[in-house]
Image 1 (cartoon, rainbow, N blue to C red):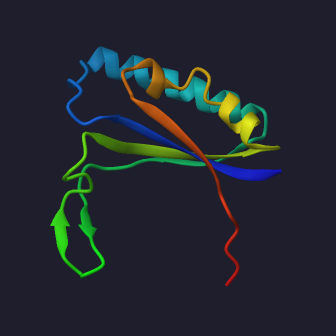
Image 2 (spheres, rainbow, N blue to C red):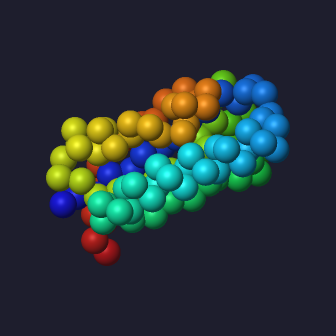
Length: 114
């Protein structure tokens, strides 16, 4: 089995949810991730914060991780799957896609030996 990363993207200008909506979203995430974990295919996940900086090749540092983008990367999940098609199938029911997010990018993770 190989590892794949799901990158969750959302609209930077999406309205802030109410506390009730946030609670419902948390439950959706717990259920969705729990389903992947129950299949023994869950590796790791994190939500990304809003604070950050971007460094370009010339060493110029800019505030914010998304200064010139409409979308933000809100988080990621690493899963195990037999192939890319299986990993893509796991995005079904992903709360990002149910709550106004724009995309879930699915990519293979290549082992890096040092």
